[in-house]
Amino acid sequence: MQWARIVRAFVILIFCFFWPQATVSVAAQLVKLTAFPADLQLYPRDPASNRASVIVAGTVISPTVTRVVLTVADADGSARTFKQAPDAATTGGTFRFEVEVAATLDDHSFVLSVDGGAGRREVARADRVVAGDVFVVSGQSNAVAQIIKGSTAGMGNPFVRSFGSRTESGKTTLDDTGWHVAEGDAKEGPGAVGQWPLLMASELVRRHGVPIAVLNGGQNAYPIIHLQRDDANPENLDTTYGRLLWRVRRAGVEDAVRAVLWYQGESDADVNAPDAYAAMWDAIRSDWRVDFNRPDRIIVMQIRQGCGKDRDNVNRIQERQRRFADIYPEVRVMSTAWLDGQADLCHFGLADGQDRLSMALADLLSVELFGGRADAPVLPPNPARAWLSAGDRSTVTVRMRDAAEGLRVDPGVHANFGFDIPGAAVSADAEGDKLQIGLPAGLTPGKLFYFGHEGGGPWITGERSGLGMLTFRGLPIEPAE
Image (cartoon, rainbow, N blue to C red):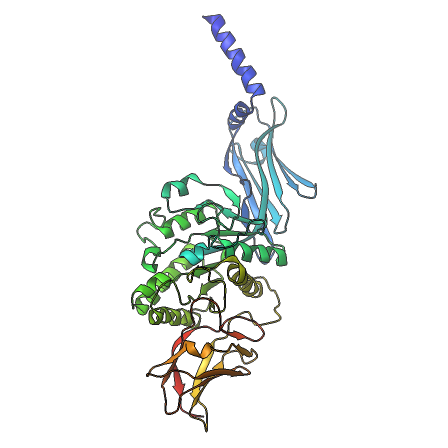
């Protein structure tokens, strides 16, 4: 019996020496880690210093360990080494390193080793660690932005990362606690961020040399009531909000979300309840400001006609969304009423849809968050006021808020206007920043409506920016000047 025990112990010793999995088990008996990066992890940078702090910490378990060594290797082959003798440098056998990493397009490897007993042994390793910025995406299917027509395969960037899986399953959410290189085409799964978010982030990486993490929690077909937070249990994994919040917190980025991008509202055009929509969006915004530590920007994509919804109900949601930027200082509204690639009259294909929206958002975020310069306006034309033209009561003139942005008016776009009384516009032209809507003889409306339409043009766009004018509802028409 004694010999049997000796033989068994010898076999186990040989197994531990040659088999990697057993080595990991032995390493776990040397130290217990309380903080260590993961492969592909992005740490939020401080925009002022362009650096992030990475914490490595833990407790020495084995009395044979005399020193803990952290090596941080950079992509250029250089390395920094940090050493601590747990009993001398800290109390209770604990160790802690705080290492700064620059937010550049360089991967970093973190290798933790221990000295003592059998020499130096590696106990933990993480590769491709970076510092950068964090964006969150939420909404319904146009936020999900899965492949409709045309793939983004090969168009992403290895420095665009994501955490966990976009999924409708709470269990799948719990099961994926890893970082991934972001992917654009998939409806769900590890690293799925959607096409326009992937291209937008990749363009920002290219322009500014800063890695970016995108966490997309969009859900197909959901009205806004189903995207609300469960205030009694914010991380409720049975809710879309809860699954996204769980991922953001487990990624360790909840205090550093720079922007939330919201594309939702089509499903709420099934009912005529724009005031309820605005109230529920206000609640979600308030929750974001608590859970994501007051994001610098919230970008709202103004929905457009399509998806089989009633034109007037869509227009009511559009007008509420247009007003968000006037109510909330951190909100910007981006038009979608200029994208021709509405492949199925609800969602966008890659060409003239996802790609153009991604570039418009990259331009906007570049200026507002990265200090970039723009040769053209980065916000869409937005009406300031309207009046009946002096001496010609058959024309309504609409002035844009940006006087420096001229307008380009496509033939036939007048069909997308309406009034508060029966009658149809007969023409639409532009003179500088002023839009001129021709009225039929004898029509004197009090309010103007711009609905947009589904599918491709005609459009009204900024002459310099190329962005579509925001749609609107009930713009008061003042008496002739």
